[in-house]
Image (tube, rainbow, N blue to C red):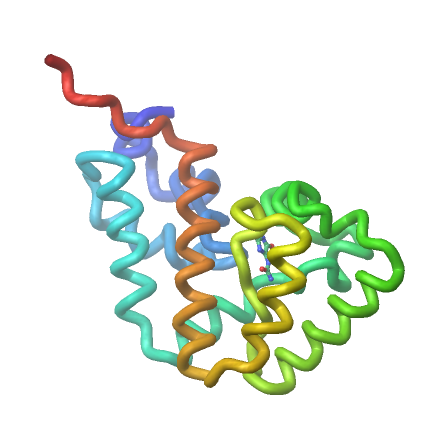
Length: 174
Ligand code: 2AL
């Protein structure tokens, strides 16, 4: 689908197709629909990022809370969204050995106890070793730093999900 096709989508179809570019937050697609037409995929992504940036801190934390834990309960019970399932599998989160699984579960819980929202990282841009290292390191940060860091990761996840749905901008014709 190219950006012209995106611009032509009625509201319901737009939210059906783009409603999970930010995990379990269809309100983001619902909000940016009224900003069309988008001149490019880059412009659509920028409007999404504007919407996220304009949220109060509690709203940003709400977005983080909509994300499932890595290698967490939803993965084990098969209730991840299709996108999250693919991303977590790509980073090997579905194939941890028992020591790794216990460590990830413990660090995820420590993180949530400390910050009140889950650890979020763009799984497709990191391998298992990076994720384990960052889960441990980021647990040491201040809350505001982690809130901002988690939102940066949400935007990276969104960027890749959008690229899977909408053709990237054609280079200018010479
Ligand atoms: C996720 C997820 O579901 N996909 C991804 O890239 N990261 N979750 C998370 N807690 O980081």
